[in-house]
Image (cartoon, rainbow, N blue to C red; front, side, top):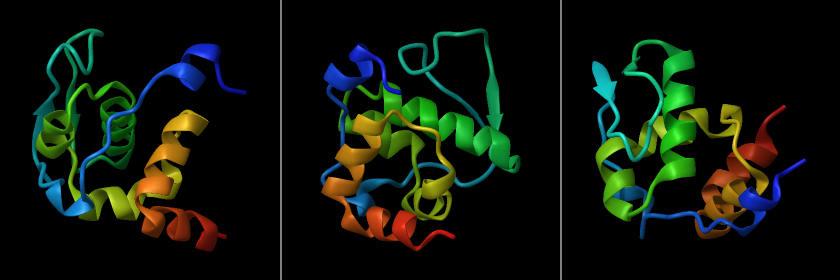
Length: 108
């Protein structure tokens, strides 16, 4: 069940997945406007950290530049179906990028 806030909130999308050229390894510290909790470094070698970081960036991005800097298209594609996202965010991304919807539909 989605919250009213999640239903009404606009979600930022890139113009194309190819613009997502963020890191694929190492440690990432997100800026405060994306992750306002305690200081937390995301270890991109840890799948749980990758999922959590991608979920936060997709939910909280204010501009496409936020997405370009922190998300990587190949990583996004490979983890898309495992991401826990608000339904409106998932719907917006899958409407904008049908290949993501296809990946979700093909999941067992």
